[in-house]
Amino acid sequence: MLKNDPERLEIAKRLRAAREQCGLSQGQVAEMMGLQRPSISELEAGRRGVSAEELAKLAKIYGVSTAWLTKSAPEVADPSVELAARELIKLDPKDLDRVLQLLKTLKKANGPKI
Amino acid sequence: MTSRTVLAREAMRAAIELRDKLVIPKDAPICIYDVAKKLDIDVRFVDGDSFDGMYSKDHGAILVPSLRPYGRQAFSCAHELGHWRFGHGTRLDLLIDNSMCSAKNDEEFLADTFAGHMLMPLWALKQMFLSRGLRADTCSHTELYGVACNLGVGYETLITHLYYSLNKLSPESWERLQKHGPKSIREELLGEEAAGVRHLALVDAAWSTVAVDLQVGDIAILERGERVEGSSIVSCDRVSSGQVIKAVRPGISTVFSADGAWSVYIRVSRKDFVGRSDYRHLGDPDVD
Image (cartoon, rainbow over all chains, first blue to last red; front, side):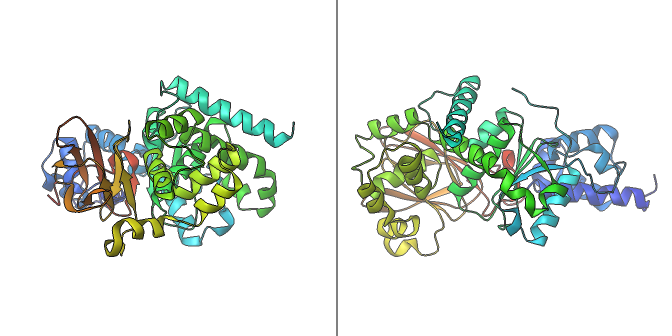
């Protein structure tokens, strides 16, 4: 994959979005991955490629699907997204958009643990 | 028996069963986010305040708005956990249709009642009052506020639960306690220092089991908090009810009594934290 490959840049953009979405700093992710902090910023700038192993580990830390990170998941709205929402009438369009964007990235549940 | 009474019993039974399955003592307060984690449910704090909470069945995820008060967030998370427990879930495209709302009333009641019994089961309340030498009907508003803090719920939520769900307050006590709110209690206990403080945790010597959760900028008053270990909090002045500490950075600290016989963990998250609940108390090397 080339350095300025649009695919790599898209993955880099998604890695950053997923990290911010789960409330971690680059330093915190670096610690969890056993990497130096600059490695994470290089990944997120698209200047460094990400291995399949790193991608799986990052997806687990961020709680997102690898399919979304690699852009192999469909972009169309997922009609199977099920929500129980109180006061949905009060939900402003900005919050609704934010929530839907988040749900698109999350991995599907395995089913109840209990 | 009315259908609501049946639903209330079903909700209470479900909360008791879930606590049993997770081996949580009936009389112990809980951190609802820790409970969700044990169940592999991904709790996310989301930037926003125009909603109370959401449960996505497909993703096994609960979304909690980051800008709501601490006690409200915990109750919302427990409410969404109720939806998870009862297998609720309405497709988004249908939910946008407002005509569905009336059909959801029973489900909302079930989830709300489940949340009440999950966070404030009768046995835990009895233990809370007993260990403090209090009675719900005669305790002061500040004493009740301390109990609410230990349970991780809002002051008004606790009064409502005691009055409506458990019938443990007389109408007179209900009225007396209703005259106060978190803001006036903060002002009463902290004086001028209450200005700008969004959450005050009142941690008495009977505080049990759970950690004290704060956000940066929040304050706690500890009846027996003489020695601090950790950099996420700093000691401030003393007030009549105890030692004041302030949350200054994310991380986990410990506070001990002078004789070392009593201690409590203080977990601090970023102000208005947005992200996975698991990560809210992580120290940040980018800030340290």
